[in-house]
Image 1 (cartoon, chains in turn red, green, blue, cyan):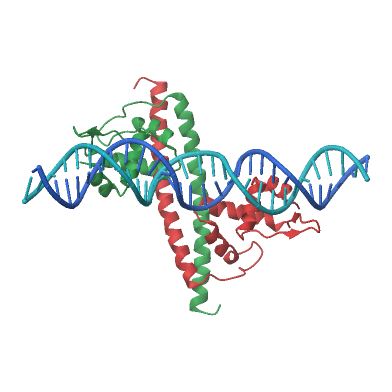
Image 2 (cartoon, chains in turn orange, cyan, green, blue; image 1 turned 90 degrees about the vertical axis):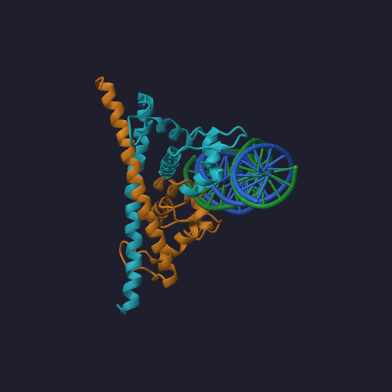
Length: 124
Length: 124
DNA sequence: CTTGAATCTGACATTGATGTCAACTTCTAC
DNA sequence: GTAGAAGTTGACATCAATGTCAGATTCAAG
């Protein structure tokens, strides 16, 4: 498929897809005329990239991590080096702390929302 | 206390504290000479601000939200308007989705880390 | 008073993914 | 072959919190 379809199917802009390629996250075959041509696997790949970006990893870490991830149908292409494992562990812990903080923030919002809703239904 | 001490005690840079003030998030008394003078309450306030920033809220939302939060010792100073409640609910749901995504990312990292660790201890 | 630490304001830089625009090329359907 | 849709590259803009620097002022202690 070409870039337009991939963008539509993943909800990611063409601009970002080209950026991913520049970052070494997403390779594409080229047509004789130079247009990018993606296989079905690209959809899954883009979703993964987005998820990892959302978790606060930068392009470089994602580029190192992707080949170590298990495909739905197979084994990883690479195994993380000890250095990478160390960095990923740090990321993991960061994400863990972030989850804790987010839960706290969510609880705060819930309380404010609840308070306002109670106040709206009765003059407590 | 003055800005240096507040920065030290909260781990937030002086630059950011001044920025919070400019955004209407953090008020300060002023000495006759114009230096900022904070009460003890400021420490807690800054921590809250940081937590909400980490949750992806922008300055404007935080400014609206802060007066609706319950102080440790008392009731909120304001109750959220219906409009604000709507916006906060959207934020709450966004945070909720983000937590789900983060957990997924954390799991992915754990798997990659575990795979590499297994491989290091035995040739499986 | 003096001196050095701390603070003030204001300006400019940074970061990194993404938006947007321009000029050009390729593809597809007629 | 031709028109219009879709794709290409490259450049510049954006956003928002924070870093950093400069020059001036204030504070606190001797």
